[in-house]
Image (cartoon, rainbow over all chains, first blue to last red; front, side, top):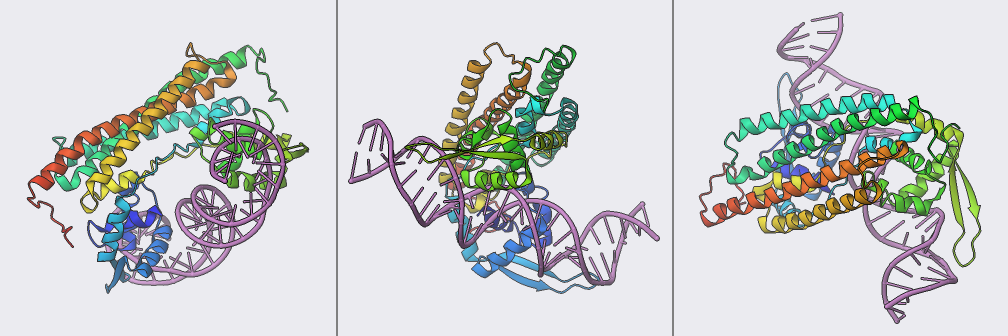
Length: 195
Length: 195
DNA sequence: ATGTCCATGTAATCCGTTACATGATTAT
DNA sequence: ATAATCATGTAACGGATTACATGGACAT
């Protein structure tokens, strides 16, 4: 239900092609909502059938022709309507946490490697959001229409910082018990993992 | 690919029925990976076909009979194998952020209401994780096999705190510019929202 | 009377992912 | 030469969501 609305949200900025939308969903809006080009092209067809957007072919030379989509008044109304509905909180859905949940049935070394990669990833993202924030909103305020984008970036910063700090904590916590478990194989676990 | 493995992870704890699994995916493991009963029943059929789990019917009186599933050695091996693969970082995917992205094309009052509901929700979750942490791991340490669960809860605490704090920030930021935009309608936005 | 808990499933639809397919232009 | 960028799409599959369906036990 939301991908269509996310596309409408994108098109409030300016008319775009599917290709441009796909890039947006890999960047700015994509920080909070991922979608690849196949999903987008499919959804664009649906939105056009519903009359929420309108396509206009632009003939190009040297490049393939492009289809520029524009919001229709119906599309704007639909977006406004969707915008007034309550959102449902997203759950975490991270399979690293599932691996940790079954810690005594998986090997710890690959997990540690994974955690290190994740730490780097989330630190990177954190730095990226901060860079964009400092560039686009150097004084920490935004013009009325851009407040939402500022807040989105702030969410990104908070999220990535929280996860990166957690990765550090996990790496600090994990080896200690890993060594305790492998150096002194007391076998204190009530269920077997030998099978 | 991951739901099956999440189910295997669950079953390392003890044999369970689909119904019990569905409850687990609404609770402990469900904090990090949501799944409803339909997904679970479908996945259980597949896992059984692959020989990763084994079902045993338990006849009951007064209640419907139940099918208790147990991990097979193949299932344990598959889980171990999956556990050694790198995880892919989860993106945020929150439609509240999409609404904010298109702030000047939606109404602000419902958004504020939504943010207030979300603040309450994330505070609740935060408190819940803290309560469980204090109850299950009062001294902040866990036996080797439970370290992953401790870390999962710690992630939950960090995540919910970050989001709750962000909701507060958003509520502080949003009305100011909302008032500025509605009290002094300077119309400073370069693209029209009047259509 | 009404609703919730236990316990399992089917069917339909939608969303997401991966692979395949084309073809000129520009940069390394 | 090789790869990336621009630009669109089809096909197939797998994962997630929602609705429908059954039926006894037990609590309010």
